Length: 244
Image 1 (tube, helix red, strand yellow):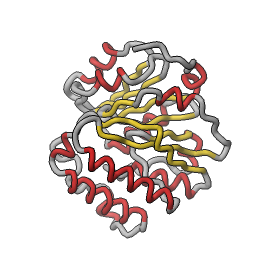
Image 2 (spheres, one colour; image 1 turned 180 degrees about the vertical axis):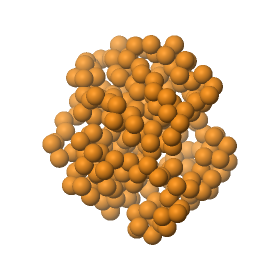
Image 3 (cartoon, rainbow, N blue to C red; image 1 turned 135 degrees about the horizontal axis):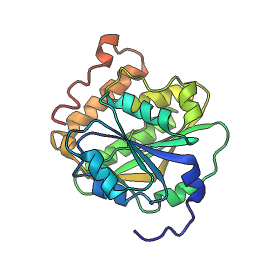
């Protein structure tokens, strides 16, 4: 990795990257290669394939692994609870951060009322139409002041997360947008910053049907946002993690 043209030391003191992982052997190399070495990474891991051992071999410095077999909402919450920095960047191991992502982040100033930023996600190879539609949906929701975040690219102030009551631990998916709505409802600014982009590197779920995945997310988010989702449905993923 080339040295960063901009010092990331201030960012390294205020940011922890939190990553829920489960059997990510094929993804860790590309993921870690996109993260500057001076930044802290915390993996909350539920793997049985040697992911934690590989992670510590690939990135022995400033990497911590915590084992937990809870759902993804619990993993994200546990990571936030264990982080010792003001900000947490939630992401997933199947993405890579775009070149310049962290330099851009380091140059940003945050008003005291800013609770969260969320960025965009683009195709690295396959399924460009799906990703384009997803970004369009994010922009449309942003115009309506409805955060439409992805857990693969979501920066949050820990204080704002606490004020919102943390992640809904019942949710097995769509926990990302749902928590952003509550951060905004708690009085914190939530901003869409599309130039902060990650690239999707593992499209196995989309390969099973990109239209199905888009409809799945849209339907669940609509029901959650309008509070029309029956309580008994919240813990069901509607088949989202099937085959993972």
